Structures are given as C-alpha cells and as structure tokens.
Image 1 (tube, one colour):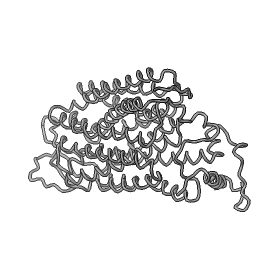
Image 2 (image 1 turned 45 degrees about the horizontal axis):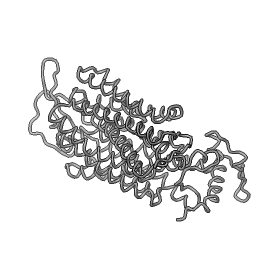
Image 3 (image 1 turned 180 degrees about the vertical axis):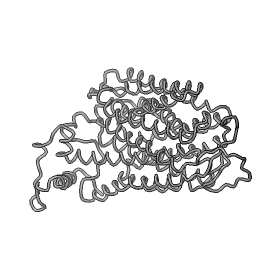
Image 4 (image 1 turned 90 degrees about the vertical axis):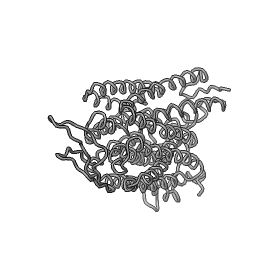
Length: 510
C-alpha cells in the first residue's frame, strides 16, 4: 500500500468532507460537495483545529484510540498484581516461587518491546496494533485457567510479549505523530493506562477467594483448579482464641475473562482505521505539519549529538526509566501481598488500598496534562521523584509502627508521585535530546523488561526468606538510585548542550 504525500491531499479532502457533513448535513451533497477552505476558517484553538483541520483531527482520533488501548493495557497489568494471592492458590506455590510469574511476564514483555520496536518502523503500524491487541486479549483471558505452574508461566510469557508490543506501539505512535508537541498527549495515553488500573482491582474483587477462620481444623484438603483451602495460612487472633485463617474458593477466571473481552474491544478502532486507509488518509506516521505548528515541530531543533553522546544519553535515560518502572510495577504488584501477609489485612482491604493507589495515579496523570503546560519536563520529573521517595519513607514508618491511616496516605501519595514520570521521560527525550523512534522506544522498554525480570526474584527471595519489610526497603533504594541517575543526566545536559533551549536553538555537539 502506498502512503506517499501525493495521495494524502486528496484523501484528507475526502475524510474532511465526510466528517464535516457528519457534523452538518447542509454543508453539501455528494454531487456538489462544499468544503470550507482551511486558510479561511482554521482556528488556533483546540476545538477550531478539530473542526476545520482534517490533518489535526485524524491524529487526534488516533490518539483517542491509543488511549483506549492503554486503558485495556493498564487493566491487564493491574489484574495480575491485584489477584496474585489467588493465583498462588491455584498453583499452590510460595511467594518466592510464584514470583517467577512476574519474571516470565517481563521476559515476554522484553521480547515484545524489542520485536515491536523493530516492526513499528518497518510495517503498517495499524496492522501491528491490531495483531497485538487481539493476541493479548486471548492470552489474558486464558491466564487463570492454567492449573499447573509451567502452563501459567507460559501463558504469562505470551501475555507479556503482546503487552510489550502494545506499549512500544502506543508510545512510539503518539510520539511520532505529534513530535515535540506530544507532551500533553503522552500524559493522556498514560492517564488511560492508570484509569484501567483503577477499574481492574474493583472488577476482580467479587471473584476473590474469601478469608475465614474455621471453628475446627480442616483435614484432608483436596485441591482443584479453582478451589483450595491450603495455601497460604495466616495465624490470627480473635478474642482469646488463635486459629488458622484459610482461603475459600476463588473465581478469578471470571475477572480475567472480563479483562480479555475489554482488551478485544481495543482492536476494533484500529481495524476501522486500517480498512478506511484503503480510500482515505486514516494512516499517519509523521509529525503534524500544519502551518501553525510546523515551525515548532522539526527534528532539526534538537541538539546535534555525536554517536558516542547519543549512546550515553540513551543508556542513562534507559536506566532511569527502567529503575523507575520497576519501582512502579513492584509497588502495584506486591502491595496487596505485603498488606495481607505482613500487616494481616484482608485481601479486600489490600485491594482497596491498591485501588486508591491507582486512583491517585490516574488523577495525577490527568493533572499532569495541565502541569506540562506550566512546568518544564526535567523539573517536573525531579519534583515527582522526590515526592515518591518521601512516600516510601512514610510507608516504611507506617508498616514498622502499624499506622493504618499512614499506609493509606502513603499509597495515595505514591500514586500521585508516580503518575507523570514514565511518559515525562519519553517527552524529555523528544524535547531536549533526540527524536523518539520505534527503536528508541524499544531500547527503553527492553531495559524496563530486563529490570522487571530480575527484581521480582530479588523481592520474592528476600520477602520469603527474611522479612516482608524488604518490600519497602528495596523501593526506597530504587528511588535513591533513580535520583542519582536523574542528577547525572541534568549535569551532562548542562555540559554537552550548554546553549540549547526548547524553542529551537541548535547546539552542535561533536
């Protein structure tokens, strides 16, 4: 299929006519189409661009569809962490062993991000997004039906593979079609991710295995795929009697089925765009070049860095985003487990705290859309990483002294603090250092996957064999490392890009 510039002008006119007549049938007929000239009617306001600028409108439509895809992505990621205790019931494994679920998922994510990054720059990106969203829906729906540990690991590997493709595809697509104006749109798609993370634990809660304290000891326990009362066992005290608190029957396969159906709906918009691209300009792959933006949106505005310095910056940024993303994943994935096993909270209470975390996470990303207009991206990253460190220090004190209210407050602050960091690192790269291509996105997400392969094993080993408090200790340590890398990047930018600013002054660095 040819997507050359020669065919784009006619296609833009066609799609503009269809959408304008959809809004107002009196504009014209098929025989005598009346299309208002952009030069006479185009406005510089957001609504004006949507109404009169077909090029802007189709890109905005793409962004909306990526937002929905990221909602389903956040839903899938969150459901695994929120239902992790029930997954352990199904496979009958301790925390250290069950942590391989996260590791194999991250390995699949690594390969998915790597392969997706390579394919993104070489094939029809709409077709790529269609494939990964369909396959991801099937994988997540099948996940809890695996009653054996090896099959669950295999399914989660493939789920991670397709998640990686969706993540690198969505980030690269939005960054490429908006260029240096992508900051609010990047925050918006990641707001969608966190919104999915809020809904997911709530949708799973009715299907969780309940905890109970039986009046007499249950012997000769039988285990089926979705029924177990053996693991884990928690010693609790009720009044003057101590008993073994046990889990009942779990029905989380319904929660995963819902997640799979929701994920499948993300395929439909991209399929429509792909089919329409045969006739209209619904396929876009380059930054917006309309007259009111093109002077601010060129790749030439970025500093001219030598290959050695590009590798240095990409490596440091990859480490920054990887360690941060590992912090986010471990906190959201193990928070329920930490609260239920260290502080003896119920699974429902743990899920409520997780939902609060995702709620403030989503609210922070929504506010981040506005914050990006008033605060420079590097400054914003520094502020939010500092606040995240404080939230984990507070969580350490809350867990040490069993202060329930402080746990809730620190979980909320952690969600707010994490909200903008991941997309802001992509934005920082595109604004100040180099163009965000599919390859650059793949490098970042491969790094994220590597760290998410290794750290679950470290968390599981230390928490299972020593103390659950290592959960908070490791989170604080990761934040300290993140701050050090962030400071290093700021210093190197001062040294290597002395006179470069965000308005287009170019500094050649040899």
